[in-house]
Image 1 (cartoon, rainbow, N blue to C red):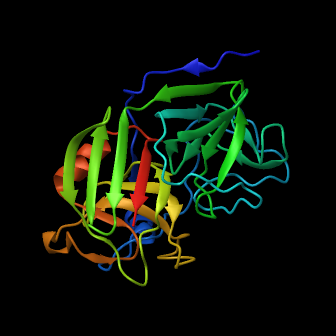
Image 2: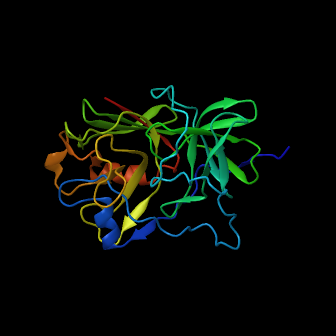
Length: 273
């Protein structure tokens, strides 16, 4: 039985510099957001050192759909903060000891892959996946070779109705902000998701940082050339805060973006409507 390697949650996250073309795909200007850039090359290893995905299985990324993935049955529950990172690609099953449905790669959009654990069964972890459909989950063995674990004390809550975002640390609020959310035809999807990556665009307008989530627009199959990924990001016009105006993303004030950029990847984001 292999031991699962634990790592401290206070790690430094490497940000990816996104060129203007990639930014345009992630965020259509000036209306809002919802897309993602073309998938970057993996930052965690070369083909010589990283095992290839299992034949016939899709990689679980924001660009893919994982068919047969079990749905998150408790989308309003808060986890205990356990997050996992596969240092080598991990095979994802539809149940403990069940059928393989995907491979979880080591990186996502140039950032290390960290996903939250939402349930346990024996020697198995059920994790949220970044793929379509929304609320997709999968099971990976806790004894997976090279699996790293950490606990994040943070929780992000987005109240779509009140158009508020709150950041908690160890159960205590450390910041609350008025934000902009999706409009009536392009709502911000409710449920549990997580911080997927941290991107730093080459041009800081309209936002110096972009934080894609592991969830997609429920009404837009694609947006701006991408798969409709929802993100947290800044916005230069403060008049949008408190309004339902975006294409599904959550636009946040500058100080909120700074605070969120320090939160570890994999941290749970609970969106309620």
